[in-house]
Length: 238
Image (cartoon, rainbow, N blue to C red; front, side, top):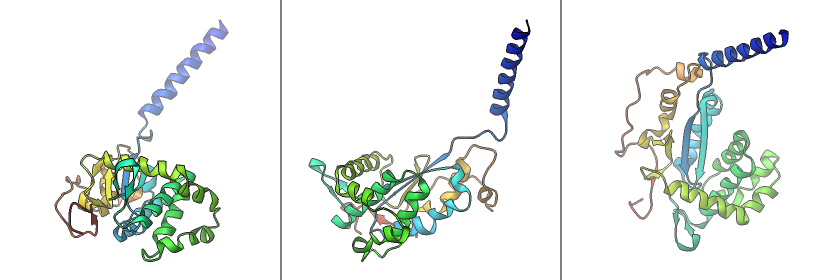
């Protein structure tokens, strides 16, 4: 009888804990997906990563974010799995390098630190000196070099080619930023407002509470705007 009473109490306790967690205002909500489609020899892309996206790692926004970096951009996939890039073979290779960093170091802070180091380099010399980031960050270059020059690097770029090609609406320029798969068009630098609005949790980062404009963000405009970007080559004049 005592055993039965104990089992009943244990069951009721589990039900109470489950219900409390479900109904708690601090229960976790799904993270907001932030997609960043970019290419490595694109100054506007580098600027967004270094001056805008990096802030999310410091201001608490990262706690409600699932960041997805896609280093492919305006490249094109031709027959026989051949990829051509807007700024030539050097950009294709650096796209692969950054794709390998994401693959080799799955932790966001690890690969973002490396990618930021590469993106800080001038486009004129990035292809030549990008390996200096291994020494600067005290990283082992072997996994990235093996991936970049091997089959895995090609697999990753084909994966990102398919991801970029599957975007609906399709990518028009880079950087192309999406929140929960919806493009922000020319308003990509204000991604924080859209992320904060999209998050369904009740406990929000301080950056969301500090926004002066509490109105619901409107639908981003697809019309050309003043923000820097690079359009899809072969479709519009650069």
